[in-house]
Amino acid sequence: MLSERPDDIGRARRWFAEELRHTAHVRSPAVVEAFATVPREHFAGPGPWRVLSPMRGPDYWTTDDADPRRLCHDILVAIDETRRLNNGQPSLWANLIDQLGLKAGERVIHVGAGLGYYSAIIAEIVGPAGRVAAIEIDPGLAERARANLARAWPQANVVTADGFAFVADERVDAIVVNAGVSHLAPPWLDSLKADNGRLLVPLTSANLWGAFLIITRRGSRYPVRFASRTGIIPCMGGRNPDAEARLTAALARADYAAVKSLRRPPEEPDDTCWLKGEGWWLSTAEAEDGLARSRGG
Image (cartoon, one colour):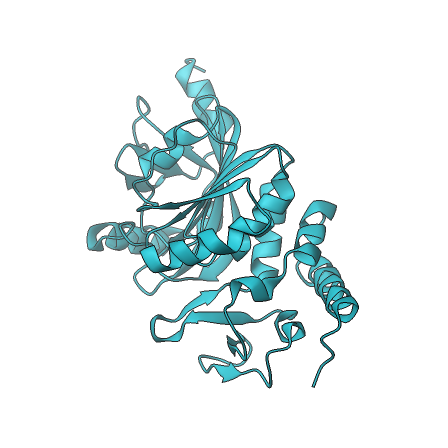
């Protein structure tokens, strides 16, 4: 059995974070420090735990015991195995959060908070002066997340709500979506600060595989960049068959990586349109091109 001495657990978390620095190519010291600080076991329920590795396929297995060091690895931890709902893979989220470039004092919405582990990671990064609205539609999970985050992260507030329809009280610096959508929610775009507001969102087809995109708001322009491929649980309210069909057709024309910008009215879809949604469309042209066209360039 692994040692349960506090100093050993602290060293294990530090090793875990340093390993993520390399495997996920994390550049931000704040992201590394957050993974070294937040105790994952506080968000996993009592052990032993059911865990999963993408390297092994679809089968869960049980950790040998309830030592917290068992969770200091790049594995998924079951929240509800029957729904295949997990605490996500640390290397994926370390990389994505690093790409998002969160800073101390920023306001963040986290859609699909689950039991709150990655909400706590985000809260550590934005610090006491920042704010995190952790949105969770499942009342039971939301209540557990609220209790988990109350221990050490008062800057994180859990809201029981449909994250796809959630409208923020104020403009935010970033929105992190933790479940796959077939189309974008206009309230997310409206909630972003005009100066460098960022949306991290997994756009996925009917088979629930797809890619994370980072959409940045710069005034009326929305540059888009590909962040990572993913397979992820569906977002309640964020899927419909027609949108899935349009996304499948878009992927037949070009991959996610071809998307360079998001456009909104009064711009109309043109020959650069990759995917059209309600009140938005994704374009293969750079965002600056749209600005030039709006000026008659």
